[in-house]
Length: 399
Image 1 (cartoon, one colour):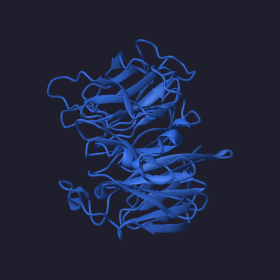
Image 2 (cartoon, helix red, strand yellow):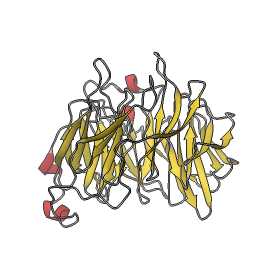
Image 3 (cartoon, rainbow, N blue to C red):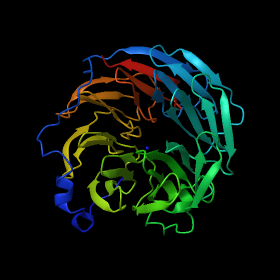
């Protein structure tokens, strides 16, 4: 799962260097070959819970969906049918403050790695068999895996790198010693669940790892094998969404009402696009375009090569409903799909920024978790509210 305005030329890469590494300017987007969505998507299956579970984002790999919920339960579902393949008991997976899940395939084995209040836990993807556990006091946020190392931000102010095969801690790195001063209006102690820090989910491009620290209003980048800090990028507001990687830049949002492009190598700001409210979600990236939702109720398509908003789609939310967008969108073929917090999923034409369809997958439920997709199906995590609804996952056919 961020927001600011601009100090452009002083922090830009030399323009000629950027221009040489992206396609020539285009007036319309050219989506990659992929299935084109139907005009009226259908719900394929629902996997619902009888209790309030607060599911983390679905992760799809090899025809299986992997889910973690705040009760501490890990599940694997068949992506085509929603049938439960296995369920891991809730033992020793406290998820009150920090939790997140990632998957990685190594040869024929899938690792499911979970971060929770007790540390890191790994399970075998095909049957849920526990593989290892690494206790980390204070717990860790959602992990990522790069170069055989599991990297996760710890709630006691250290980022940890653990061996994927064994869980052994290979390194840790302090991020409290150089904690920046709080920007005006964003007091760090007000953003923390408990002292001393509130890290967010990590992400990687396979070479470097980046994660935001919510209460510190900044994003940090590390080399995964050694744990060397590569850079620290500050904003002027709290940061929640997971960083996203493109070929040249890392993209983040902030509650200072900005979307940022950061040079992946130097950690310097390349550009900033202003929004009308905070940005909490992570973006989706396809070719030279970034698709980003904001709490102003808008989905923006940004041409990352020229820092230009190609189009803005304003969701027609019901009166008195929240306009916030907290989930990461997904791109499939000529469509970009995103979800409003109030519970509606939209399919938007990538080239035009116009609505193709909308669907409310579960009456009374909200949508805050990232969307998932396997190219044929869209997976939506729905959550109950004080007024009703249900918790679970809904699969929607895209063709």
